[in-house]
Image (cartoon, rainbow, N blue to C red; front, side, top):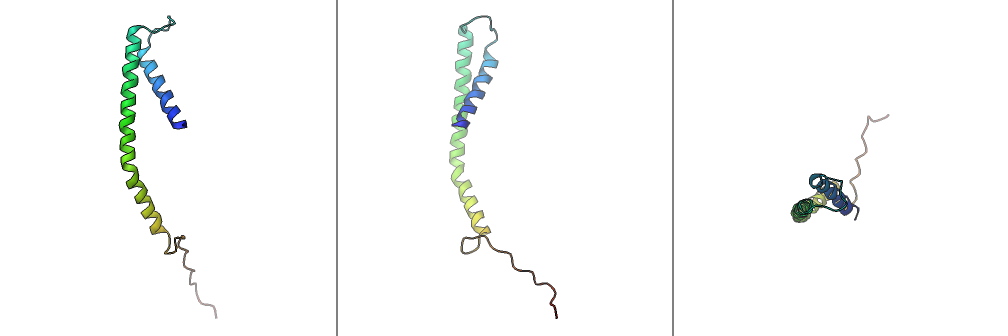
Length: 91
């Protein structure tokens, strides 16, 4: 939810800065309104395409992480413990 709100707030600010140039009136002009509609639509489409790519790549990333984690873990699934150092033998 936090990420969604951050994206929404950034989109709102970007489109507002791009499209609204006159703050002397309470209501938007027709030109500003159509600019805001097209700006928001472009950003929503781009976000949907990015999320689609992310969803497509996520299983491969999770599988690679699981394989890396499995390689780091010992046969029992626990992290491999370091071998004790064999220092010089004391007499």
